[in-house]
Image (cartoon, rainbow, N blue to C red; front, side):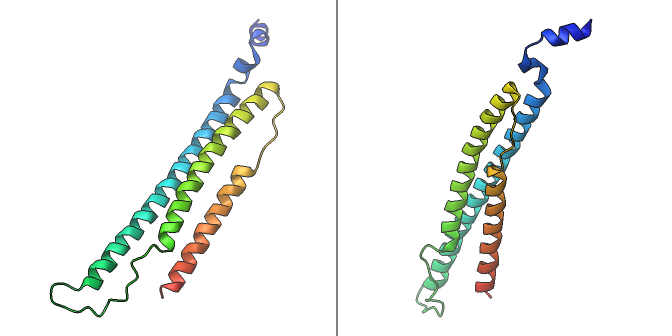
Length: 141
């Protein structure tokens, strides 16, 4: 008798667990994009901190000439990387929403096909950030 009730339910209710799994995946992607944006914000603010310290060191105090006057105070790689990471996080959030709605339609029509665009974007961004950090650290030696 319960089988008849289960058969009468709409497809959306029958696939409730699948829809909830899709929503959890969407929320995981949103958390990842927020984390990438937060990391970009921290990198950008660290660049601002480095510029302020450079200005303070180059100033040298009242009546003193500083031997550190060649400290660069312009925008560096950290600022550019920070802004790029914030943009990447925002794009990933948008792509996560598009993917969520696409998968939701595919679940309802029972034609699910996995997509790799977000996975590839995340992997490339991690490799790019790692490569930048390696170059940055090697350059500062």
